[in-house]
Length: 116
Image (cartoon, rainbow, N blue to C red; front, side, top):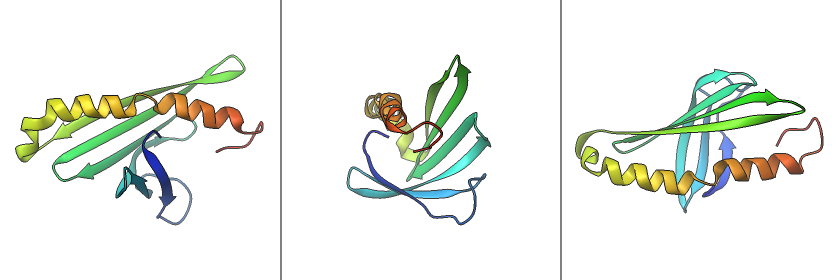
């Protein structure tokens, strides 16, 4: 992901609802968790920082010999953060605009059958 320098799974066991990750983004350690999962088709990650909740849903569907991926990013604010919500949403869109291109670049470097 754009802006993410490192990501570590912190929950033992296989990927499932509630699986948690810590990640380093722009010099700050943050946390996210899997809030929705349809294995091989869709994963939703939710992060909360103060009064802001960001939800990222990645959806994959087959396309010939490859696949397409979409990203739906949503931002909700509470408390005084509601006043800044429009600015946060614009900043989030700008910061996340390269995510799918970065994912494609990583996946295209992987040998057939391997996952990044």
